Length: 147
Image (tube, rainbow, N blue to C red; front, side, top):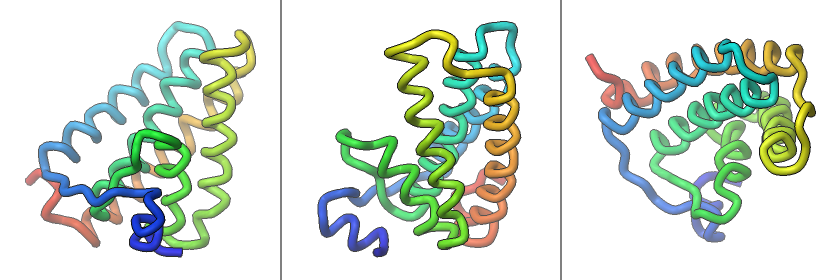
């Protein structure tokens, strides 16, 4: 399926973004990557790192002209990743979906579900995704990047 087909099904809505919005989201990602290294619980660091990764997926979706409706917003945002960056990114979407579920667990159900290794892995993944998103923006949507 395409993003346009998702929109036809009501899974996405059209969205017009701006340099300011993208810059704001990139600043949040930068903050989250920094904060994920803080002296707090692994659960909290994991949730913060997840937020950064989700922010990068949001940037891709917004820059593609769409946003998710409120219901299943995180799920749709993550699942759009391979639709935007290519089918080879499906394992990345699967990984982030598992992170989404773990983040829900540590946020709502159980303390101690995330480990330091989980945090390190997610932070490393998010840093790599950040580089890929920046490359994609420079190539596909350079007008959205601040000079």
